[in-house]
Length: 303
Image 1 (cartoon, rainbow, N blue to C red):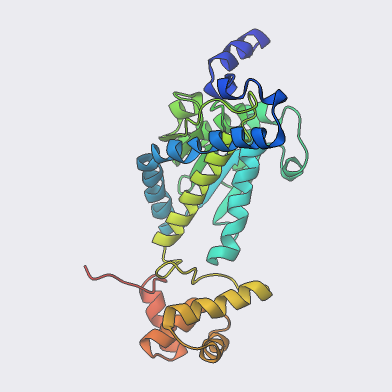
Image 2: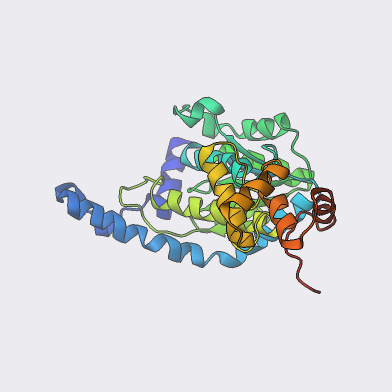
């Protein structure tokens, strides 16, 4: 894209418009600045609310992919890529899933998590190459993330995923973006102009974080990774999480601390298994068999 064409494209994007509410922000006091930012941030959840049908549709596709052994793959550049990597990295300790189940790819690779990699987001071919590197297949789900909706790296990935027959999802903050035209499910979080013109790490980034939270949380809930609203598959890998596991067992079964610790020991720290043993009055072997039969779900609602 020529410089003139790029300038024209930027002029058309909502995320690149000047915000009339912050035109005098450089003359404001600290309190006035943060009040302006806060007032703008209040618009974000309302913009996300309008996307709930598309987000729910995406969740249904993700759950179906998980059930068939597929993966959820995020792809983005800059802030968008970092948020995808963050969400993916939080799934194993929170839900007890293998790290390859949710994968985050960022233009420029791991170094780009801490340092800007100039030009990485403009490499359309690298989007395809990075998916090939992880052996992306038709069973997987690709979520492309970019506030602009036009990042070449992400477009290349979405195009390749479509060629394979995989489900593709886009998250952008501009309407009718190039990504939305390619993706099968388009999530358009129209949060409006940023407080600082073009600083899409702000409202657009916040919207992306909210959507990513929903995608993985709702999907994991439907996969049986919670009981009531308790994270029963939490991995007790440090002191805080071990204490949380004890509390989860106590809350789910209404037992005392000593009982929770005893059952967790029998279950090798597996809170879900300990809860099944307690609630159903089962030994470990029987509880393991029932959980396997119920696809890891503690609660099975009658048909």
